Length: 251
Length: 214
View (spheres, rainbow over the protein chains, first blue to last red):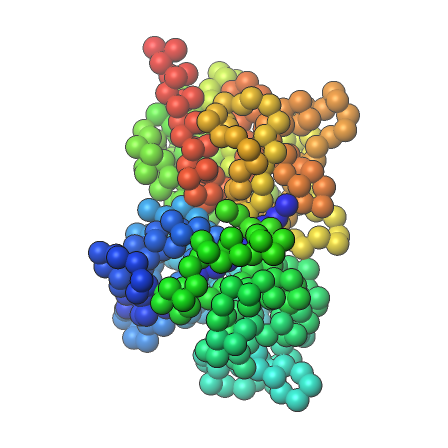
């Protein structure tokens, strides 16, 4: 049976991890490759690098970072942040990443999703959606949550699927950073609107939150960053908890 | 020496990384003569069947691959590289595959989330070289929308050749092994230690077969 996935997200800036793992004894807690390897040993199913490099001249560093990571870590690797064209995506995918995730660029230029999917296959294209509740619906935000768009999150997810996205990475801005649990209502609504996998993100605080979003929220995968980095929740413990709840995971 | 065919597959670098990590002797090429003279072939793949067959044709690699396979050299096809062995795929009905094995690659039926993406278990079907040293129902990583059906007709090659099945709505063929031909639907280059073991098994096979020829 297809396992539910646990995904670790690492913020990478100028080729270095921001907020690196603090509870494991690593030689270099700022090295993306070493952190990805540590999470692999912990049993994480996938790693996402979120590239938050601001300066244009340092953007190429992510390609080198991916190449170095992919030489030593043999699990799926996705990269998001700053990918605005097929050429950007090609550099990242040909250096050993399996997927690219697009967010703002896809909202502003939806045909990018189709171009990426035709070029690399839909399995390589993740549509990242930042959503916040707005009355009785959820709105899409861009530019890292700073800009409200006129798009409805559920409709955008469905449109993204029809344009060729192979997966939705859904971040609840209402829950993000709270550690009070994922947004199960939002995740369930999106998961029912599409026939591609949905990754829930934002709000993870403990193992039970993962269990909730993977069952009630109908998510196919759940992502977290800081609780893994600080060791609040260990991936290996989390997976054992999920299995004890009857959820299929890779152990 | 394993000849890895470069036709622009998205997972080429990851496959190279795995071979390099394992210390396997390999070369990457898109040259027809090097493919034709190969002692072992590895065809990576992820993406679109039609694009793969078009690229192989444009690089004039279809006949050289068949020539090498005619000499029964070890072959490992990964994902699309396994699909390539068959006659056709519903992903690109107008473009034939290599047709070395009979069968057609099908699309997952509606009602399932597609792509079939993530870690799923193998049911190892027979003692195979590919899965030497592995037991139980190991998890490996999949990312695909098309699959090789497990044909109920017992005369079908795909049934006899199945080295592993995986369940996703239906039971489909996750790995084949027939003589020198091996293929995996999953991505061993992205399946952690289990995947590296599968690649190593193929590498060992290639080295053994080269030794027998010497």
